[in-house]
Length: 268
Image (tube, rainbow, N blue to C red; front, side, top):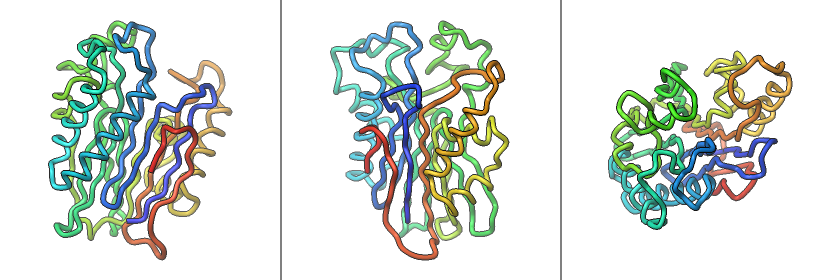
């Protein structure tokens, strides 16, 4: 597995609330949810939470390589809870993150994927077919004011994120592929996903650009698109943290891991 990635904060902020990490047989992307302004009950910021959750995920994956991915996520949430017991972990607005996690099992010829909230994983087979694993429940809420989103977070009929509730892991989208039939994979935060959702790119085109020009090209492309947006033509933030991880399973040459990162929120 040859991995490359880019992880950069929004031009509007100093802190990077995204996180990326990769090991020999796994890779993951987290996208921290920017605080809404409601009380969180936590003395830590989103970047702190995302970095700790990412480290716990990586550690559990290394020590339990055969554990089902939902259990990996559940254990990581529990272990992250244990790092700040002084905080109000029952607060629905406690710091949270999306999760895009992939793991390879070469002996079993299997690629496993897990997605929680809006950080998709895009898989292209050696036959050229593209499959997107996504969790779009946040796109179908009845209202988006702060109070409604708070009430619907990690609740039946709402949407689920990795925060302080371990049962959120049971709500993740999971899928498996025959590893020998996979050409390449991308895991991305919605700061990169907007190339498709907002700016007219296609998933095959995004994978082609990753293979040709690398992850940093996608970050540069999304920043250009964002600057070209007219005021009032979009919902939400003009800029966002942008993270994309690209894994090739049948690269033409070379191997290993490379990355372009900004801020300590990204690690290998």
